[in-house]
Image 1 (cartoon, helix red, strand yellow):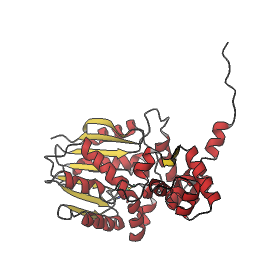
Image 2 (cartoon, helix red, strand yellow):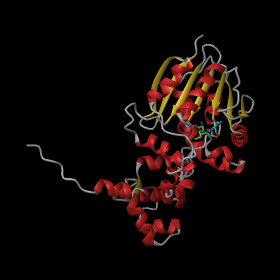
Image 3 (cartoon, protein in one colour):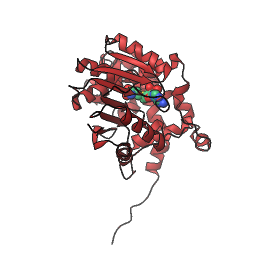
Length: 334
Ligand SMILES: C[S@@+](CC[C@H](N)C(=O)[O-])C[C@H]1O[C@@H](n2cnc3c(N)ncnc32)[C@H](O)[C@@H]1O
């Protein structure tokens, strides 16, 4: 006889209260908790002093972080978990604290998700299309470190030696172009992004000393023509900002603009083909409801379809960051 599993509300409660986990991580980053621990603050009094907060609040925050496996308890006192130590200690070039806070400006709007889900008049362009240069700068100060990490990973996975020009659609800070120019000395690269972002990209490009080979062009990839002298196109981390028709259209435009024999790489937060996850892709898709656009999560098989309909050959799906990002590639006929 099969025993029916007794149901309880534990899982449901955990989801209902999960925002407390987000808040704890974000506050720990804002207060510099993990940096203080890495600098030797291993007890509640030492942490309270370093963060300039009440010891009771230090105990509350540390207890939550221990429960979330962000902090470990060792004989010597509190220590950071290995991933926290690598990515959330200020001063390291790997510091990703800004990225942990990237979605925080939308915090209040998540609290109004129900209202947003009732919207019926959905817009085409994401919020960033209405940003000022200052807002675009703040946005890309948060994407820059994680973008550089992703770009380095791309440069390890893909060999662009022999290629002449990379066109990065929605290239943001320019991370992929900057790393590509550093990696392949004969390659030129173009960040193609909305006007305020292109201005910010030029700042990152100059800071990295690659202005001689990397430029930023202001344009809307849904509407404006693409340069037609690139033999590589990259489009990274903007997939859920648009619905299927628009992504298909942009990929078709990229195919037509590419030089014969060129290649395209789409790096995005994709759903599995059965659309049962992962949560991270579903999260970015649902998040588009806050800006009341037609953006949504796309599956791997959806993306392969966009590529093949556009005319790309040899279309392949590769894991990019396991469980988080996928890379879909295709080649234009020579
Ligand atoms: C999350 S950022 C990713 C930036 C960069 N690809 C990276 O991986 O670091 C998404 C970028 O897509 C750009 N974008 C969105 N819609 C766009 C459009 N219609 N035309 C040009 N760029 C667009 C945004 O301005 C933003 O810079």
